[in-house]
Amino acid sequence: MADARALPRRRFDARLVLAGGWLLVALLAAIFAPLIAPQDPLAQDLLFERLPPFWMQGAEPGFWLGTDSLGRDLLSRIIYGGRVAFIVAFAAAFAACIVGSTLGLIAGYFGGWADRIISRIVDIWMAFPPVLFAILLVAVFGTGLSSVIIAIAVIDWTRFCRVIRAEAMGQSRMDYVENARIAGFGRFRIMLSEVLPNVLPSIVALLSLEMGIAVIVEAILSFVNLSISTDDPTWGGIIAEGRLSIHQAWWVLVFPLITLFLTVLSFSQFGEGLKARFDPVLR
Amino acid sequence: MTACLDISNLSATLSNGQRVLRSVSLSVEPGEVRALVGESGAGKSMIGKAVLGVLPPSVKIVEGSIRLEGADLGALSAKERRRVIGAKTALIPQDPLTALNPSRRVGPQMTDRLVHILGWAADRADKRVRQLLDEVHIREPDRVMRAYPHELSGGMRQRVLIAAAFAAEPRLIVADEPTTALDVTVQKQILRLIAQLQKEHGTAILFVTHDLGVVAKISQKVTVLYAGKVVEEADTAALFADPQHAYTRALMAATPKYTDPLASLMPVDEAVLAGLAAEIAIADHDWRPSLDRKSGHG
Ligand SMILES: Nc1ncnc2c1ncn2[C@@H]1O[C@H](COP(=O)(O)OP(=O)(O)O)[C@@H](O)[C@H]1O
Ligand SMILES: [Mg+2]
Image (cartoon, rainbow over all chains, first blue to last red; front, side, top):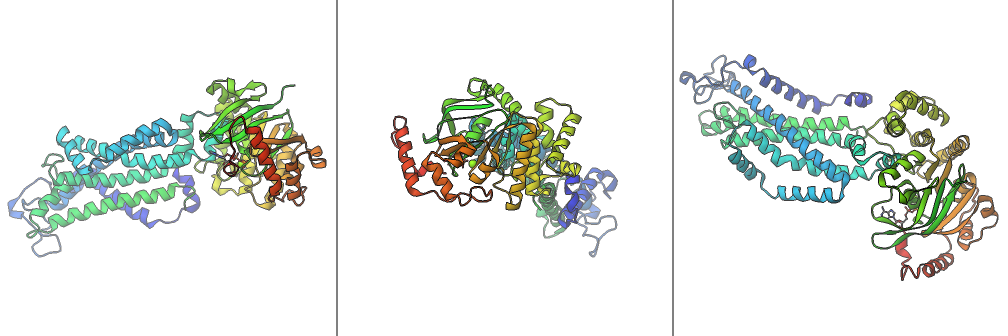
């Protein structure tokens, strides 16, 4: 869809390439973690505890980013931690996106009582503080990957709903929607064939942004030990451990933080870049 | 012979009770062009929207009927009404920029109705649209049909919309100020194009305009509208030769050269308007106690 549309202006977009590049590298590393990770991320070795990163005095070959206070290889743990991060990012963001965009499209396009009901639900929903809401949900569902995903989707669908509702509302007043009515098309078909293509760029941008947000929320939940079991490495979990040994081994805190930051930033920039590219008018 | 379009005693109000149409009657015979002329805010577009079944939700029809080739739209179910309107009418819109979906290619937007509403085979619809593009003098149908609307000029888009309107062979086309949003140089061409296609296809047109010059050029019959009320109705030639109503005369006096299609209306004499307002207030009296003239204008 984007291909032919982007043809006349296929210029180099540094933002899209850099963000997409980082995400691709991080995603591939996570998928092929068993092949790529230099060490077993769970293997403890007290002889190798708190090794510094490779350029510092006392570094050991094979432990590129050093080790934590149990002697586990930091790079391998970060690579494996990406698995949880990406699974949560994709699953939670898609779930939030499908629920939120569908309701937003219906509310914005149909208006009337459908809009009143959906908007009221969104208002009530957003009255809950999100992090408390997440902790509450995880407490109810129990910890584990799927409850983290459900918690994020349950909280963040409103973000999609509000934006897409506003855009669909603007679209529904456009003349081409009226033309489709005159031609004899039904409201539902018009929503899908006339309105949806115009809000799609925003959906894509929000989806990518939401993936970044999901990564952060998962990290926060891991940080407060409410995410998945503590054995599997997660970025939030590594950061939490790193915080305890900040004075002896700063790298355990800093490297996962940088990874997290770059990933979240890349998701949001990638989304914005895609939106600009998708949009036939915006240039 | 049944009229192609027959509107009788149509009245409509806004949700606050303000009247936008006052007992409007007009008819369009098959193959005829009827101009609907009046100042901005007179309710011309409302009549068009009422015929096409796309009145804004805030506007309610309170009396009267609209018949399309004899079928009373008000008496039909919503679904049946959509089908009748979809099969018999088309719109040439005012603003070609917003009338095409920016996210969809032009070709499918033109064939949509033929394929999905009228049930034509895809290749027949494609052929038909190409034929119409040729009739509106578009020389590269492939390029235009593959293009997104923003890749075409305003004049090109209006040609596309004219072609799309005629493609389904509607019985009636509502043209709502189809040249107003265009460059002055393009207006004449587009007007000529509509006149030409109208003759060739024999389609009846309700031609909405605020421009007497356009009326003179394109229509056989005229209805003059003021504040939602029909003040005069005549053959075009007769109207220009001998306007009956003071408002019509004032309109003509205000148009420097009404045969010049590029001239637009100048303000009508205040005294004439005051007289009209009083006249409407009296006519409305039993319906609504008072008429706020100012709020009658959008
Ligand atoms: N969507 C709408 N909702 C309510 N009132 C409207 C709407 N559109 C137009 N009106 C009012 O209806 C009247 C007639 O408008 P319109 O038919 O657009 O005039 P014209 O086409 O002759 O310029 C105006 O007074 C205008 O303010
Ligand atoms: Mg109008």
